[in-house]
Image (tube, rainbow, N blue to C red; front, side):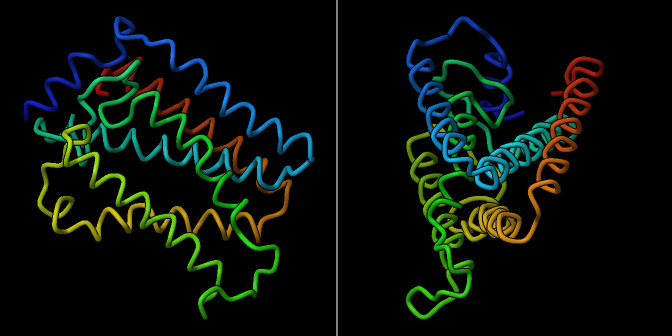
Length: 209
């Protein structure tokens, strides 16, 4: 097992590193959603929450990789944090992903057919968001806050990291445009239930992650 994996497991779900800056971060997340709820922009609210829910599922599978390999997850966050939820996601990252989908759909032009720089906006804008997120991950990796071990998920093969963001971002734009409000609500409820089941099984019952 890598040193980063061992450190992440050491601080996993420990409350001894709590920091008060989490409170204003949480207030920021809530304020963004309250603003959209006030506008009755339910499509943006549900789409944003869907991306957050899907990201949490992905993080659980990342943690399972560490369990089954006994070596490392695809990405590990062993550095300073107020609370490490899983080996690859801390509370700060989770709060960021809580609003990432909301920010993305707010950046999309109302006209689905509009072109930006000659390209379809529903492809260019999610791809640009994905490239920005991949760049942030590269910088976090360079300072040691985010650890990569596997060659196919590491510098210079950051195209895999880009794809890891691009596919969910493109899917988020598609869901926002194509699914009805009812379908979004049912999908979100189902995804939350799935995450709860996975958490109970792999954390509470088996203790694998």
